[in-house]
Amino acid sequence: MAVYESIPYSDYGSSSTTNTPGLPEPGYVGGRVRSCMGNILPTSAPVAGDIGYLFRIPSNARILQLFIEMDDQGGATTTVDIGVYNAADLAIVDINLYGSALDGATAFSRSDVRHETLNHNTMGQKIWQDLGLSADPNTIYVIAATWLVVATGIAGDISFACMYTVD
Image (cartoon, rainbow, N blue to C red):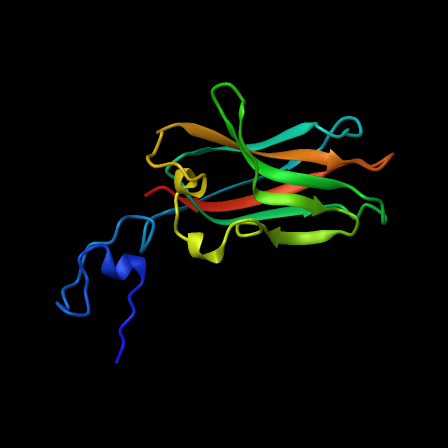
């Protein structure tokens, strides 16, 4: 009989061979779930390359869900990337880590894009791990939307809701 263990079960002191309960790292089991939500309401129609900064988040956060919602674009083609920027200088870290060319041609209602570009096996990773870094830079990142293609006369409204843990 094979025995398979999840990361929180095996990495933190619990084992099917010792049957010893471990203390899970905060955020894997238990911890406080935090949330942030809001809207980007451009004052004029966005153009390709425009950036909408959604929210700041620490590099050690585990994003559980990242919902993005766009208005129905009336069949017009409007696409956005959802990525990570450095909060200190707003430099691009990964322009499409959480969403690549999300299509607003039809309304998508509260789509969870947490795994839109990342494999489901990244569940539970911290942002710095999602970025492929070898260590936590202990910094603040900005999750942002970057418009790639914008149809003429489109408002470009984006709503978001994020659930994450840091402890």
